[in-house]
Image 1 (cartoon, rainbow, N blue to C red):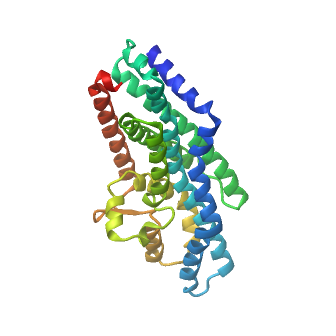
Image 2: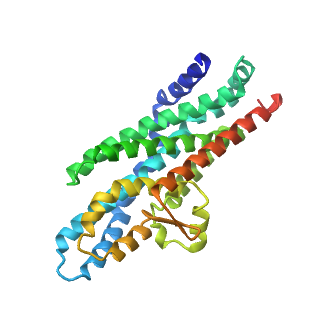
Length: 303
Protein backbone atom coordinates (compact mmCIF):
# COMPACT_ATOMS: atom_id res chain seq x y z
CA UNK A 1 0.00 0.00 0.00
CA UNK A 2 2.80 2.43 0.86
CA UNK A 3 4.42 1.89 -2.55
CA UNK A 4 1.09 2.41 -4.28
CA UNK A 5 0.52 5.68 -2.39
CA UNK A 6 4.08 6.84 -3.08
CA UNK A 7 3.74 6.23 -6.82
CA UNK A 8 0.33 7.93 -6.87
CA UNK A 9 1.67 10.99 -5.05
CA UNK A 10 4.70 11.13 -7.32
CA UNK A 11 2.53 11.10 -10.47
CA UNK A 12 0.22 13.81 -9.13
CA UNK A 13 3.13 16.07 -8.19
CA UNK A 14 4.61 15.73 -11.67
CA UNK A 15 1.35 17.17 -13.05
CA UNK A 16 0.62 19.95 -10.57
CA UNK A 17 4.22 21.21 -10.53
CA UNK A 18 4.05 21.72 -14.30
CA UNK A 19 1.99 24.92 -14.60
CA UNK A 20 2.01 24.66 -18.39
CA UNK A 21 0.49 21.19 -18.26
CA UNK A 22 -2.26 22.39 -15.91
CA UNK A 23 -3.06 25.33 -18.19
CA UNK A 24 -3.12 23.37 -21.44
CA UNK A 25 -5.24 20.63 -19.87
CA UNK A 26 -7.90 23.32 -19.32
CA UNK A 27 -7.43 24.97 -22.72
CA UNK A 28 -10.28 22.99 -24.30
CA UNK A 29 -12.61 24.26 -21.58
CA UNK A 30 -11.60 27.87 -22.31
CA UNK A 31 -12.08 27.37 -26.04
CA UNK A 32 -15.56 25.91 -25.52
CA UNK A 33 -16.53 28.80 -23.24
CA UNK A 34 -15.32 31.34 -25.79
CA UNK A 35 -17.24 29.65 -28.62
CA UNK A 36 -20.44 29.45 -26.60
CA UNK A 37 -20.25 32.98 -25.21
CA UNK A 38 -19.43 34.71 -28.50
CA UNK A 39 -20.82 32.48 -31.26
CA UNK A 40 -22.76 29.26 -30.71
CA UNK A 41 -24.62 30.27 -27.54
CA UNK A 42 -26.67 33.00 -29.25
CA UNK A 43 -27.84 30.53 -31.90
CA UNK A 44 -29.10 28.11 -29.27
CA UNK A 45 -30.80 30.84 -27.25
CA UNK A 46 -32.53 32.16 -30.37
CA UNK A 47 -33.78 28.69 -31.24
CA UNK A 48 -35.41 28.20 -27.83
CA UNK A 49 -36.80 31.75 -27.71
CA UNK A 50 -38.36 31.45 -31.17
CA UNK A 51 -39.91 28.13 -30.20
CA UNK A 52 -41.50 29.62 -27.07
CA UNK A 53 -42.60 32.77 -28.94
CA UNK A 54 -45.03 30.65 -30.95
CA UNK A 55 -47.05 30.09 -27.78
CA UNK A 56 -49.66 32.71 -26.83
CA UNK A 57 -49.17 34.95 -23.81
CA UNK A 58 -45.41 34.46 -23.41
CA UNK A 59 -43.11 37.07 -21.86
CA UNK A 60 -40.43 37.35 -24.54
CA UNK A 61 -37.94 39.11 -22.29
CA UNK A 62 -38.28 36.51 -19.52
CA UNK A 63 -38.10 33.65 -22.03
CA UNK A 64 -34.89 35.06 -23.53
CA UNK A 65 -33.30 35.45 -20.09
CA UNK A 66 -34.30 31.94 -19.01
CA UNK A 67 -33.10 30.46 -22.31
CA UNK A 68 -29.74 32.21 -21.86
CA UNK A 69 -29.37 30.72 -18.38
CA UNK A 70 -30.38 27.28 -19.68
CA UNK A 71 -27.73 27.38 -22.42
CA UNK A 72 -25.15 28.66 -19.95
CA UNK A 73 -25.79 25.78 -17.52
CA UNK A 74 -25.95 23.34 -20.46
CA UNK A 75 -22.51 24.55 -21.57
CA UNK A 76 -20.99 24.30 -18.08
CA UNK A 77 -22.40 20.77 -17.70
CA UNK A 78 -20.70 19.79 -20.95
CA UNK A 79 -17.38 21.30 -19.91
CA UNK A 80 -16.94 19.09 -16.82
CA UNK A 81 -16.49 15.76 -18.67
CA UNK A 82 -14.23 17.58 -21.18
CA UNK A 83 -12.11 18.66 -18.23
CA UNK A 84 -12.04 15.10 -16.94
CA UNK A 85 -10.72 13.86 -20.27
CA UNK A 86 -8.10 16.56 -20.80
CA UNK A 87 -6.78 16.58 -17.22
CA UNK A 88 -6.32 12.82 -17.16
CA UNK A 89 -4.60 13.01 -20.54
CA UNK A 90 -2.16 15.61 -19.17
CA UNK A 91 -1.49 13.71 -15.94
CA UNK A 92 -0.74 10.50 -17.81
CA UNK A 93 1.81 12.26 -19.97
CA UNK A 94 4.11 11.25 -17.09
CA UNK A 95 4.10 7.72 -18.53
CA UNK A 96 5.45 9.04 -21.84
CA UNK A 97 8.10 11.07 -20.02
CA UNK A 98 9.08 8.04 -17.96
CA UNK A 99 9.53 6.08 -21.19
CA UNK A 100 11.60 8.78 -22.89
CA UNK A 101 13.90 9.27 -19.87
CA UNK A 102 14.24 5.57 -19.08
CA UNK A 103 12.70 5.95 -15.61
CA UNK A 104 10.06 3.42 -16.59
CA UNK A 105 12.74 0.69 -16.44
CA UNK A 106 13.37 1.43 -12.76
CA UNK A 107 9.66 1.42 -12.02
CA UNK A 108 9.07 -1.92 -13.75
CA UNK A 109 12.09 -3.57 -12.10
CA UNK A 110 11.09 -2.37 -8.63
CA UNK A 111 9.44 -4.91 -6.28
CA UNK A 112 5.99 -3.64 -7.20
CA UNK A 113 3.31 -5.55 -9.10
CA UNK A 114 2.22 -4.40 -12.53
CA UNK A 115 -1.32 -3.96 -11.21
CA UNK A 116 -0.04 -1.61 -8.50
CA UNK A 117 1.81 0.45 -11.11
CA UNK A 118 -1.28 0.58 -13.30
CA UNK A 119 -3.55 1.62 -10.43
CA UNK A 120 -1.09 4.28 -9.23
CA UNK A 121 -1.12 5.98 -12.62
CA UNK A 122 -4.91 5.71 -12.94
CA UNK A 123 -5.49 6.91 -9.36
CA UNK A 124 -3.20 9.91 -9.80
CA UNK A 125 -5.05 10.92 -12.97
CA UNK A 126 -8.43 10.31 -11.36
CA UNK A 127 -7.74 12.32 -8.20
CA UNK A 128 -6.20 15.18 -10.17
CA UNK A 129 -9.25 15.24 -12.44
CA UNK A 130 -11.62 15.27 -9.45
CA UNK A 131 -9.78 18.25 -7.98
CA UNK A 132 -9.81 20.28 -11.21
CA UNK A 133 -13.41 19.37 -12.08
CA UNK A 134 -14.63 20.23 -8.57
CA UNK A 135 -12.92 23.62 -8.80
CA UNK A 136 -14.54 24.12 -12.20
CA UNK A 137 -17.97 23.42 -10.74
CA UNK A 138 -17.34 25.79 -7.81
CA UNK A 139 -16.20 28.67 -10.02
CA UNK A 140 -18.97 28.01 -12.55
CA UNK A 141 -21.65 27.97 -9.86
CA UNK A 142 -20.48 31.32 -8.50
CA UNK A 143 -20.68 32.77 -12.02
CA UNK A 144 -24.11 31.22 -12.62
CA UNK A 145 -25.41 32.69 -9.36
CA UNK A 146 -24.11 36.12 -10.38
CA UNK A 147 -26.00 35.74 -13.66
CA UNK A 148 -29.21 35.04 -11.72
CA UNK A 149 -29.40 31.26 -11.41
CA UNK A 150 -30.28 29.70 -8.06
CA UNK A 151 -27.47 27.76 -6.36
CA UNK A 152 -27.51 23.99 -6.71
CA UNK A 153 -29.13 22.09 -3.87
CA UNK A 154 -27.19 19.83 -1.52
CA UNK A 155 -28.60 16.79 -3.33
CA UNK A 156 -27.47 18.19 -6.68
CA UNK A 157 -23.98 18.80 -5.29
CA UNK A 158 -23.76 15.18 -4.16
CA UNK A 159 -24.94 13.95 -7.55
CA UNK A 160 -22.49 16.19 -9.40
CA UNK A 161 -19.57 15.07 -7.23
CA UNK A 162 -20.48 11.42 -7.75
CA UNK A 163 -20.61 11.95 -11.51
CA UNK A 164 -17.24 13.70 -11.42
CA UNK A 165 -15.78 10.62 -9.72
CA UNK A 166 -17.30 8.31 -12.33
CA UNK A 167 -16.10 10.34 -15.32
CA UNK A 168 -12.65 10.90 -13.84
CA UNK A 169 -12.18 7.19 -13.23
CA UNK A 170 -13.29 6.21 -16.72
CA UNK A 171 -11.19 8.76 -18.56
CA UNK A 172 -8.20 7.87 -16.38
CA UNK A 173 -8.52 4.24 -17.46
CA UNK A 174 -8.96 5.17 -21.14
CA UNK A 175 -6.02 7.58 -21.18
CA UNK A 176 -3.84 5.08 -19.31
CA UNK A 177 -4.33 2.50 -22.04
CA UNK A 178 -3.53 5.14 -24.67
CA UNK A 179 -0.37 6.15 -22.76
CA UNK A 180 0.81 2.54 -22.53
CA UNK A 181 0.44 2.09 -26.29
CA UNK A 182 1.91 5.44 -27.36
CA UNK A 183 5.71 5.44 -27.66
CA UNK A 184 6.77 9.08 -28.07
CA UNK A 185 5.98 12.53 -26.68
CA UNK A 186 5.25 13.79 -30.20
CA UNK A 187 2.65 11.10 -30.74
CA UNK A 188 1.10 11.84 -27.35
CA UNK A 189 0.90 15.54 -28.17
CA UNK A 190 -0.78 14.71 -31.47
CA UNK A 191 -3.22 12.41 -29.72
CA UNK A 192 -4.08 15.20 -27.28
CA UNK A 193 -4.86 17.53 -30.17
CA UNK A 194 -7.17 14.96 -31.77
CA UNK A 195 -8.97 14.22 -28.49
CA UNK A 196 -9.35 17.90 -27.67
CA UNK A 197 -10.90 18.50 -31.09
CA UNK A 198 -13.25 15.52 -31.16
CA UNK A 199 -14.50 15.46 -27.60
CA UNK A 200 -16.56 18.61 -28.10
CA UNK A 201 -18.41 16.97 -30.98
CA UNK A 202 -18.75 13.59 -29.29
CA UNK A 203 -20.18 15.31 -26.22
CA UNK A 204 -22.70 17.27 -28.29
CA UNK A 205 -21.18 20.56 -27.13
CA UNK A 206 -20.34 22.42 -30.35
CA UNK A 207 -23.54 21.20 -31.97
CA UNK A 208 -26.55 19.71 -30.15
CA UNK A 209 -26.76 15.98 -30.75
CA UNK A 210 -30.18 16.44 -32.36
CA UNK A 211 -28.54 18.41 -35.19
CA UNK A 212 -26.11 15.61 -36.08
CA UNK A 213 -26.65 12.88 -38.67
CA UNK A 214 -27.91 9.45 -37.64
CA UNK A 215 -24.62 7.85 -38.71
CA UNK A 216 -22.57 10.21 -36.53
CA UNK A 217 -24.97 9.77 -33.61
CA UNK A 218 -24.53 6.00 -33.93
CA UNK A 219 -20.76 6.41 -33.61
CA UNK A 220 -21.14 8.76 -30.65
CA UNK A 221 -23.42 6.27 -28.89
CA UNK A 222 -20.51 3.80 -28.85
CA UNK A 223 -18.33 6.14 -26.77
CA UNK A 224 -18.63 7.11 -23.10
CA UNK A 225 -18.42 10.84 -23.89
CA UNK A 226 -22.08 11.54 -24.63
CA UNK A 227 -23.26 9.52 -21.62
CA UNK A 228 -20.92 11.42 -19.30
CA UNK A 229 -22.12 14.73 -20.71
CA UNK A 230 -25.81 13.80 -20.56
CA UNK A 231 -25.73 12.85 -16.87
CA UNK A 232 -24.34 16.25 -15.88
CA UNK A 233 -26.78 18.08 -18.11
CA UNK A 234 -29.79 16.21 -16.75
CA UNK A 235 -28.97 17.07 -13.13
CA UNK A 236 -27.65 20.60 -13.60
CA UNK A 237 -30.23 21.92 -16.08
CA UNK A 238 -33.33 20.45 -14.39
CA UNK A 239 -34.36 23.54 -12.32
CA UNK A 240 -33.84 26.17 -15.03
CA UNK A 241 -35.34 23.87 -17.67
CA UNK A 242 -38.55 23.64 -15.64
CA UNK A 243 -38.64 27.43 -15.36
CA UNK A 244 -37.86 28.01 -19.04
CA UNK A 245 -40.60 25.70 -20.29
CA UNK A 246 -43.17 26.53 -17.61
CA UNK A 247 -46.57 26.80 -19.28
CA UNK A 248 -45.31 25.17 -22.48
CA UNK A 249 -46.54 21.77 -23.70
CA UNK A 250 -44.56 18.90 -22.21
CA UNK A 251 -43.87 17.64 -25.73
CA UNK A 252 -42.00 20.86 -26.53
CA UNK A 253 -39.80 20.59 -23.46
CA UNK A 254 -39.13 16.90 -24.11
CA UNK A 255 -38.21 17.53 -27.75
CA UNK A 256 -35.85 20.32 -26.78
CA UNK A 257 -34.18 18.18 -24.10
CA UNK A 258 -33.62 15.38 -26.63
CA UNK A 259 -32.19 17.73 -29.26
CA UNK A 260 -29.83 19.24 -26.67
CA UNK A 261 -28.65 15.81 -25.50
CA UNK A 262 -30.10 16.18 -22.00
CA UNK A 263 -32.29 13.12 -22.54
CA UNK A 264 -30.61 10.38 -24.54
CA UNK A 265 -31.88 7.71 -26.85
CA UNK A 266 -29.19 5.19 -27.74
CA UNK A 267 -29.83 2.51 -30.36
CA UNK A 268 -33.56 3.18 -30.24
CA UNK A 269 -33.96 3.04 -26.44
CA UNK A 270 -34.10 5.79 -23.85
CA UNK A 271 -31.18 5.99 -21.43
CA UNK A 272 -31.79 7.36 -17.92
CA UNK A 273 -29.21 9.22 -15.86
CA UNK A 274 -28.63 6.07 -13.80
CA UNK A 275 -28.15 4.15 -17.04
CA UNK A 276 -25.57 6.71 -18.20
CA UNK A 277 -23.66 6.26 -14.93
CA UNK A 278 -23.64 2.48 -15.34
CA UNK A 279 -22.44 2.71 -18.94
CA UNK A 280 -19.61 5.09 -18.07
CA UNK A 281 -18.51 2.91 -15.13
CA UNK A 282 -18.50 -0.18 -17.35
CA UNK A 283 -16.27 1.62 -19.84
CA UNK A 284 -13.91 2.48 -16.98
CA UNK A 285 -13.74 -1.08 -15.67
CA UNK A 286 -13.22 -2.46 -19.17
CA UNK A 287 -10.34 -0.12 -19.97
CA UNK A 288 -8.75 -0.69 -16.54
CA UNK A 289 -8.70 -4.44 -17.16
CA UNK A 290 -7.35 -3.99 -20.69
CA UNK A 291 -4.72 -1.52 -19.50
CA UNK A 292 -3.53 -3.85 -16.75
CA UNK A 293 -3.43 -6.78 -19.18
CA UNK A 294 -1.43 -4.83 -21.76
CA UNK A 295 1.02 -3.68 -19.08
CA UNK A 296 1.53 -7.22 -17.82
CA UNK A 297 2.17 -8.50 -21.33
CA UNK A 298 4.78 -5.91 -22.25
CA UNK A 299 8.18 -7.41 -22.88
CA UNK A 300 11.28 -6.09 -21.21
CA UNK A 301 12.62 -4.69 -24.47
CA UNK A 302 9.54 -2.44 -24.71
CA UNK A 303 9.93 -1.08 -21.18
